[in-house]
Length: 216
Image 1 (cartoon, helix red, strand yellow):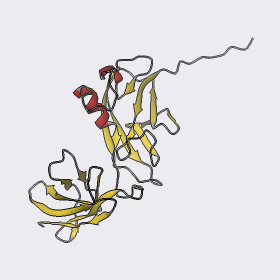
Image 2 (cartoon, helix red, strand yellow; image 1 turned 180 degrees about the vertical axis):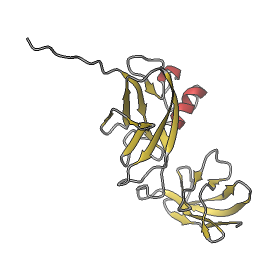
Image 3 (cartoon, one colour; image 1 turned 90 degrees about the vertical axis):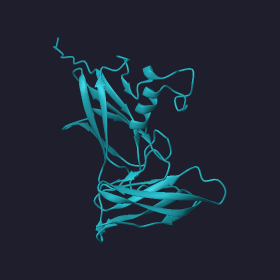
Image 4 (cartoon, one colour; image 1 turned 120 degrees about the horizontal axis):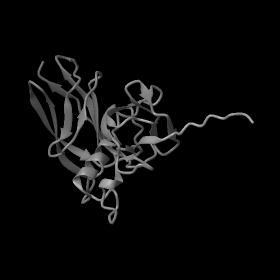
């Protein structure tokens, strides 16, 4: 009889991401998901599910980044403490924090669960392949005639926005435009510089180009 070695493959952490534009678990492009230099052991195709095996109990920073061939999402860092509530399928977002009498995307879910869902959303980069008919505002933020990285661009009143990278490019998408058009105010901010605020008209199913010039 030939001796056989057996190894237990124990899922310690399962990261389940969603597309920040569509809300779908199917992503537009491929991602690299890792802890430091350790990549996820495997991914479930077409489900944006990334599995880490045999992790010691600890708090981990999970880096999420698009692969070079599909640069559709902004980088994201997700902090997760292992173990999660379920030892059999320790998934993040942790449904042990959810009210299972409601849909998981219900805005009245507990705050702790909603916070994890927000962290697991990967948001679009300027190269994202938006569907035809998406309402967009896009452009570049500059200061002193050069692209400005680290500027936050958002619609006034929104909780979140887009933080520019080295190219200075930004993109905002809107799914709440009623009628053919709607007034909005776009704000660009950067530490130590005066905010730039511009009133625009969002046009449903069209792209508005808007470059933003900040003080040098």
